[in-house]
Length: 190
Image 1 (cartoon, one colour):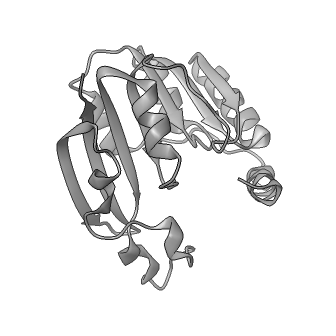
Image 2 (cartoon, rainbow, N blue to C red):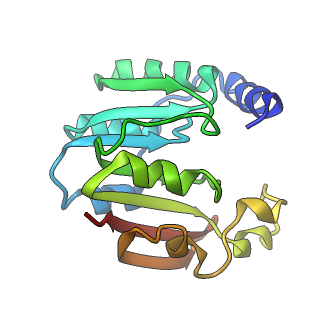
């Protein structure tokens, strides 16, 4: 990412005076319900609502985002919630995770086709799971969409193709009341 990306995300999170308690994504809760807690990594965690929920559910969580301001808000929320999360300020263009260290990698509403699949596959241990949800090109057509750049939206059927070394457990594209997304759950092969 560029310095302008860092500035943009810091400005966004600085404008949120008190983010309060944010709820974790329901789809993540559904997917994690059948998993044994282990070590988790959330990439592009934003204000950390998913990471906080995972930590409260017994996971050891590392959460990465480019914005130190967003992470400071997340750390305050996690402290209030009594959740221990390792917040990591890092640019995903440069971030290198511990190889084979994670049972779960989570990504919501972020897309980097070039670098992210490699980061995820490297971070997962054999048998580890990726839970990934992000916008599709259908979202760009919504009148209320904040997205305008098709580079940040998935084409139909594209998400599973980004993970050739993972076994697809489930994949679906959904038109939800407020956004259009693709959802992938995949397991890293040995």
